[in-house]
Length: 238
Image (tube, rainbow, N blue to C red; front, side):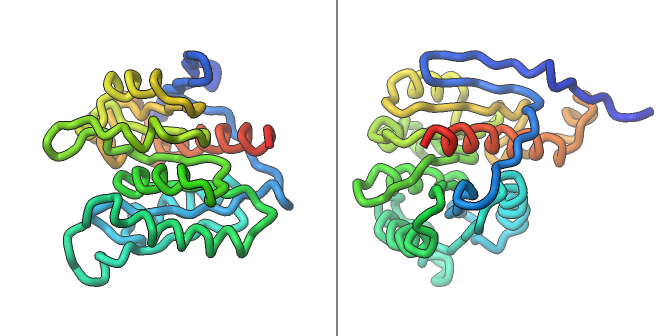
């Protein structure tokens, strides 16, 4: 028996001021080339480098869906020294300098900052700097809750650049309820794509995939298509 698939028309979208939540299949969007093709700077999370299988897979997904002129990854310095990650604030300067180098290489192209977990938090901090001209930020599993349970929303509340969150419903570091409270307080336009039964890395347990009649690749493709819609709208409004 073939896998059950959701129809595009089943997409649930809830609009709140300048925010939107999407929960299922997004319409396929292809960003046009030339100067509309974005350059993407993609930051890794705390526990794995840019060469990890997850990062490499998502790098390709982003490159294909966004028709990116380039998706650039990098490693924070602590990775090569095999040290634990420092506080996110201590990574801002390194991240910012890297972003400026890439932006200078592609001055005519929209700059999109993407990050996984900790990398998304630092990306928000970098995007809030006056000398960084990012068109948008995309957070893949934003770590809203700190190790001691505190809600770390300062970078989000300071941000004015449009932002998209891709969050799993089973992400222990960011409940959708807590995120929605923060989104209502944010100045920036925000959008949320929900990965049903996804964990902090959007991984879905096999039993839940079987019940939904989808694969992990289906869920990730749906998320990246939602990102493409968001980026396309931001670029078109420039």
